[in-house]
Picture (cartoon, rainbow over the protein chains, first blue to last red):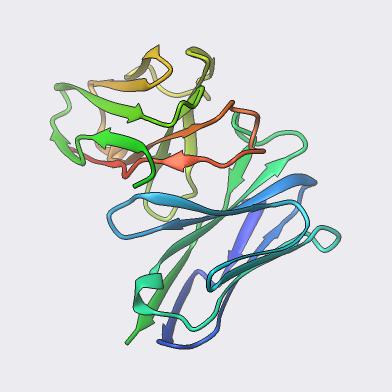
Length: 112
Length: 115
């Protein structure tokens, strides 16, 4: 069982809809990353957070350390938001040598 | 543009071939990474170089051989690969490699197919 679980695995929505992607983890962490991967492979780091909430444009990331849960929200979604969104956590112990454990990703499609 | 450049973007090779993947970063970072991304699986860390020194190889088969001649360049040398090695190989860099507490900057990846 992966220590980082994302839901949903796949999500198709209409342009303009409010999108929520969830990430749950089972270990103690010091930081959580949200990454975006477009078709073609390149990955962009969206957020790194350890508490509270961060906002960048139409993207909002929240984290609840007590509940071991984070959400990524997209407001006024657009077809260019179509991508795979990956959650990764930095564990206090364990994880890869870079300290990160990755989720499998959520594949988002925004239709015009 | 993330400041991390990978070449080639696509590579098809036979099991007896030898090829190399190249990664270059122009961000002044001290840590560089190779990741493997297979279909339906989470990203897997293969190698970490911190200040040009390899710190982890994560039990990667010896048919994958990394090289880091300086802090801006990273290579992954491939020889006698297997079809199951077909995947997207991603390079990344970060400022100091401090165990996940800093942002990673990724290249666009090399899509590798082994026939």
